[in-house]
Image (cartoon, rainbow, N blue to C red; front, side, top):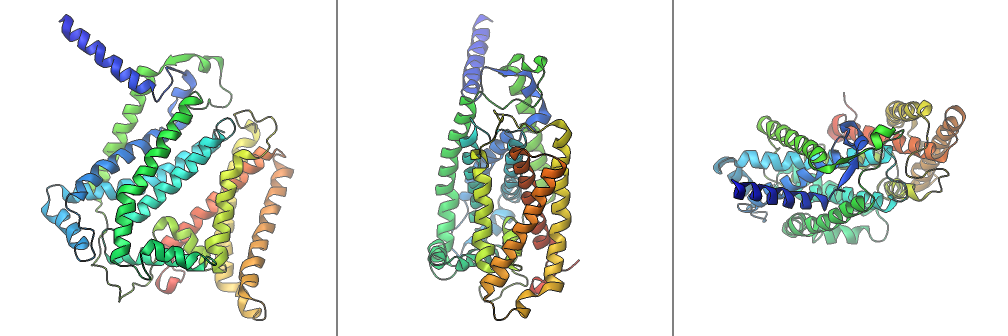
Length: 432
């Protein structure tokens, strides 16, 4: 009996030491509240581990050649015990990982955890999110069916619009002028080796930065009761285990009812109509229908990404780790940008689609000016009017304005993604 108790004590000590390498020994009681973080960071880690596990199983039977890729996927689905289920889990967990990683970034921003001294961890989080998107993108081609082949063809073709270096980058990614065997080899290597290695490095760095900063940031208006320290193990750990098990159960049930898509084998000679990029690039593909290609593919995404990355480095007065907007303005300053994005974005799409046709009336003006610079300046004017309204009606604090802009642009991109995914039919025409 004594030996058994000693063994259990040693095991608990080892578990505790492992967990304390990730978490502080004690955490404020306020940070145990599920609605403060929703467990999103832990969910992302669980899905990454699930991706690694199911990906290794799929590798045993996958053939990374145009001649064998499609047949190997069919073999996995039809001839391997639980092969269809494991492919479903791998596919859907990859899609959920993008969504959860985005929601985690959103939660970090809304809780003020992007401000100093946590600003560099925000940058690491942005890099991790981009790596998650690209590891999904490189895996998208591997089934080698019509859906994946033409989605990658469309996505990589966007690089042609990047001045000077775009075509070279496209051919480097593809391994040649078109999507072929070299492309599949490149994508398979990046998907199974290069990107997982980079994600591991940045993930360890990310957790170390969180640990160095004392764990998750405190909620705003934390009471004295919430500041009381509580043992991480078992209080926080048990909550994380429950969230992880619930997430795994959800993914399993979802994968039982919904199969990962697999169309007919890729045919380079026949393009589906419409040919669309993966859903997470649909916002950019939608922009291509309304802006000059250089602005849609390069300038606008670069400005948004640079702005989101540099938000923490602006000079915020009185911002010391928590967002300093007041409770009276917090909800309106979030609801208003969401409503503005939901209403104004589709209205602008409809106006440009059916009314403006600006280029037809300005043939003497280069398209990069009429469809690019003028359109961008018009959007900049609308954004400035929005900022003026926020300053007059809600708050003049820079932190509040940054919050409103972040929510506005995020909502606008989501709307563009939904329009491109669900409301574009043959010839990329708008449909109901």
